[in-house]
Amino acid sequence: MQFIGRQHELSLVRRRLASDRSEAMLVYGRRRVGKSELIKEALKGVDAVVIHYVCRKTSFSQNLAGLTKATAKAFDESFIDFSSLDKLLKYVYSKAASQKVILFIDEYPFLRGDDESIDSEFQIAIDEWQHKSCLKLILCGSYMETMQKVMEGQAPLFGRFTEIVKLRAFDYYEAALFYPDRTDEEKLFLYSIFGGIPFYLIQLDDRLSPEENVQRLLIPEGSFLENEIRLQLTAELSKEENANYVLEKIAGGVGRYSEIAQNFSGSSGKLSHTLGKLEGMGLIEKDSPINAPSNKRQHRYVISDNLLDFYYSFLFREMTARSAMAPEAFYHAKIEAALNNDYLPRKFEQAAAEYLLRQNRAGKINPPFFAIGRYVYHDKAKRQNGEFDVVTEDERGLISYECKYRKEPLGMKVVHEEEWLAKELGLNFYGFGFFSRSGFTEDVDRDTYRLVTLKDIYS
Image (cartoon, rainbow, N blue to C red; front, side, top):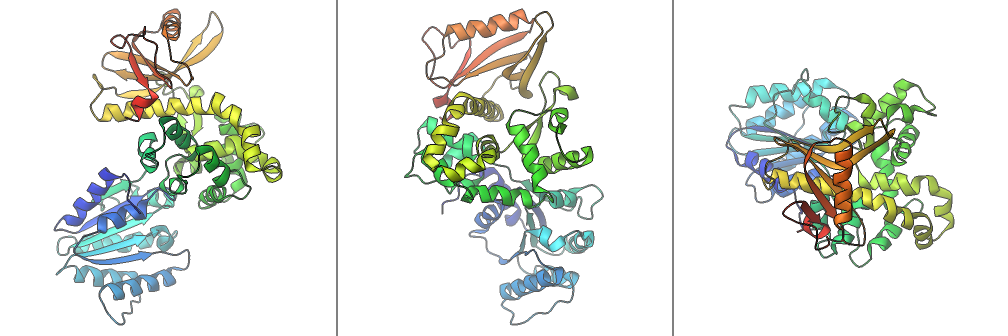
């Protein structure tokens, strides 16, 4: 299978593997994000002895036995017996004194468990051998809480890693590399529902329409991707029902802590614990307005994974209907209208923000902005609250970007409405931009406004 994307991360790992010194790398990220595939791709063509062991969810002694067996095989030894991890590490590091050796331990949290002394064994070995060996140590894992503990300031391995790589889900553009022959509208549709996790994206069938892929992979009760969602949650959460409650609330537009807490059956401590876990796993995030980043009353939680967002928006509460209806009928009756009228326009805003970030990081926006987010306002006279979709802040001030996911081209009527609203509210935007699914009418001046079409963001 072709390796897609991750060129920056790939170059980081390859650079460390090519050096003539010992290295210690930590590669982490949520389940199915492609950590192991990244490392396997980086290892291709490398002239070294490679020890690769995938830890199991079992006892430490059994994992040590498995790691010992992988070590013996790598060095073509008929039998090696290590009574402790430190002896195995000394053996491997000593072997790497005269040749390049790569020790790739996948799913490290299963080896470590809650025993911090395991980290200490690696720390002691690194400190002792880093200047007299050429071992490339790679610790990889998807249990986010454990992997983050390894990096904490008081942790034994703090400061020992020469490279830390956190793999994130692909954005709208990178996700589209998995379905390059689709139309731009199909690309946005697929990203809005399936998100940017590589393992989910390779399940898509190019022979089927986007809608048919949804009907095959998600709608049937107990579907493949529904099971993946459950596995993702149960991997690090003790109570799946608390996560279900929180995610359903957020998907329904309830994002403030006080609102989520209403009708929650557990204590405030349990709710805070669940929110913290989901945030640590990269499944939700706090969204703060660009003009009120420290105002906690304006903070809201949002689901940062599109597959989860879609599932809890349309499928989770519909178990009975899903089991009673054919997937195609369920899609047309329960999903189609809300998807087109609300969900996809919201995801178009997300793609617009991601597009601006890509352009900014590539040096294509001048002056470059240093902040991006929604802009909230409160009109006291009219007792009206609202927000602008996407706003950036640079050295000159603020630029507002309005996003319209409509079938007709965006015209000057929408432009004037945005300018008028900003003026009425006394907001000092020095520029305006517009994202349009279907392009713009001829009277909208590209020299005055920043105009971006759906086609542009995928170019």
